[in-house]
Amino acid sequence: MQNKVQLISYVDRLGGGGVADLRRLLKRPLQGLFGGVHLLPFFYPIDGADAGFDPIDHTRVDPRLGDWADIQALSQDVDVMADVIVNHVSADSPQFQDYSEKGDGSRYAGLFLSLDSVFPLGASEAQLLKVYRPRPGLPLRPITLKNGQKKILWTTFTPQQLDIDVRHPEGQAYLAAILQRFAEAGIRMIRLDAAGYAIKKAGESCFMMAETFEFIAGFAAQARALGIEVLVEVHAYYRRQIEIAARVDWVYDFALPPLALHAFFFQTAEPLKQWIRQRPCNALNVLDTHDGIGIIDIGADSADRAGSPGLVPPAELDALVERIHANSRGQSRQATGAAASNLDLYQVNCSFFDAMGRDERSYLLARALQFFLPGVPQVYYVGLLAGHNDMDLLARSGVGRDINRHRYSADEIASELQRPVVQKLLQLIRLRNECPAFGGEFQLHESAAHELRLSWRAGAHEARLRIDLQTLDHEVCFGELSLRF
Image (cartoon, rainbow, N blue to C red; front, side):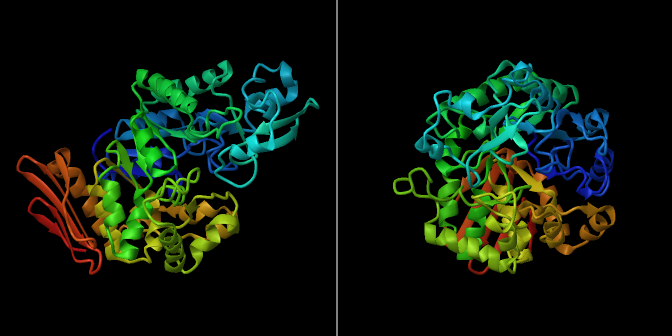
């Protein structure tokens, strides 16, 4: 992966067109800004139960967006990342439809996990309650197949997303076919979606177990053999994220978004500095993604709350969430928790710009922080345009995360790109891409609690960042060039 800023976007929500239209956008108004683009699910269909994360056919581009030739053409311009949804498939998939019609006589009977296949001796209450859950309730869906058989299927996320047995030959063949199709289209980076839940084991948490690491390592080896790097997406206790990073190519720095907000809200950099001293460097640095702002990533370990404290005390974590709600004028509260469907227990749904109260200087300084940390920065398309919460989309869909998934028309993009805050962000991106210092040595400098000082040096090239969190006085320097926000 190039050490340049990357873009994260849905194909059809940045300009309203297909892959070819996004390619034209990247070659014209956004020319030279990004070393790569993470295309959020573009598989058939893009408008299922979970915005494309429940594909009917993971090896087919949704025809409304284009085809594999369009993906391959885009990959000639920028590095392309795509999602491999390893944990589940759609209940409308041809594999499940065959299983539903034929039951145990289907070749795909072993592909789908059921209560019995995970707990062949039966499950006790204690065993079921031990299963780690990203959402309320049990990961189970009672269903009557078309042939009349009754089953209880495993569903980690929505009832439409049926978990697969990734160790069964049909599960292995299913995932291998996806990798092969991606490699043929020039995709050189994949994100393993929901990989932490991929392995189920009776009596265990079914989340990031030793067996899960074994699966990730094996699948990553298959990908590397095809020339594909692997990013693992896991929201977890921060020490666990460090452990994961030591065993994979890339991880997200999901602790950064809430820690950046904490620093600006509480006017202290101490928890952030604590994280910088130990965070993995093989990280994709994000402030926002297609999901919400993670809270679990800096909180205490839910499995051992007393013995494993978080980076931020519980009272401050609660206050951080309330500050986001206040800054967004209550909009994030309407999109978070039980207020909206697609409920996540560990995220606050809000655009990052609105989470910061639309304070342009703080927002740009947070982006500078993101760009100065070791790793590769990724910028979400809504964040690129300093986007606001989309309350109309939220009202139409009822899906909390849609508050930060606005559909930009081409005219909107042209207008948003002229806003001063966006112009300054584009300048910041270009300087981060072009400055040779970021290929050198990073340093976190000693400073007062309310101040953050970072620098990079490669030979005669230097880049410096200083932020006073009390006054927002700052220094953002790329060689001899200084930026003021």
